[in-house]
Image (cartoon, rainbow, N blue to C red; front, side):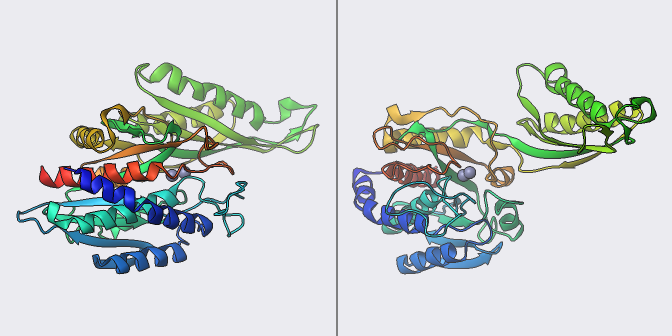
Amino acid sequence: MITDKIKNDIDEIQPGVIADRRHLHEHPELGFQEQETSKFVIQRLEALGVEDIRTGIAVTGVTALIHGTKPGEGKCVLLRADMDALPIIEENAVEYVSQNKGVMHACGHDAHTAMLLGTARVLLDNRDQFSGTVKLLFQPSEEWGTGGALPMIEQGVLEDPHVDAVFGQHVSSGDPTGEIQVSGGPIAAAADSFKITVQGKGGHGASPHQAVDPIIIATNIISTLQTIVSRSVDPMKSTVVSVCNIHSGFADNVIPDTCELGGTVRTFDPALRDSAQEKLTKIAETVAEAMGGTATVDYHRGYPATINDDAMAELVRQAAAVAVGEDLSKPLEAGMGAEDFSYFLENRPGAFWMVGCRNEEKGMTWPHHHPRFDVDEDSMAFGIKTMVNVVLTYLAS
Ligand SMILES: [Zn+2]
Ligand SMILES: [Zn+2]
């Protein structure tokens, strides 16, 4: 359990945590290109004196260990921070503005990395307070491509030593500084994408009877796709099917040959995910066939839903209440965004929580991925206190 002394220690290291975050903010790197970020993390870990630093995992990923010295058997708990930035031109007029033009820490992963380094420092200084092992994990590319979590897991980060539980946190500009939000069950959606290519038969705009119009087929497919959510999903559950782009034709008097649609499908429930894919494919193919054309569906499965373990979420809630106060420990409402921490939670029990970083007075109210997004740095002490107490509580359980 976190003590007043440890809370004071965390308050005292804040200037260092803020300096780290600002350094990372000034030098953002895109997914799987976090070479300098990774070097910075490694340097910090070496200076701290943590053990078994492993580097270059899934290109730039890093892990390291802290062993508790309190007698007892002890489990192994993994703490994860993501390190990547986004392809955005920063519009903040701050002294720590991005020096890498066109790349910006606009999601707060700079704060996640700085908070995990701060957490490591405090846990190392308080090794006599716990038995067991803390595995620190710095992950590349949460925002891009396949994500960094899955390849790190495939390269064995959940073994040697065997990890028993996984925890991670994300700052949230939608919630006031210091609020810690967590709940059991689904908290972020599975994010899949699709492309539908409708093949018709081009012709003169004045002679539709001699052509097969792929645009009218596509609009019928779009209308019918709306029935997946409205007519086949339990109204008490959530699914999103959005067609987000459509491309066809070039002239006002030519019926084109093909029409392409693209979009996203979001679900929490794995069974609904399977059925949405199946229904979408069937609707596209059969509507096209009924109208004399064909449709080819290219369906891509992205991150799975992020599902917190009920018991672990309750452990985090209680740990946060002790660390930052009962009044700041709140339930988390699920959102349809996606997060590749989901892969860790598919493999081990654990929980992911939000740390409010919104501050109206400081003008830090812009949403994530916005060119003016910024993190109220005071939030980082709340995140570190919660993470430290989650570790102490879990390893004592
Ligand atoms: Zn993001
Ligand atoms: Zn993020």
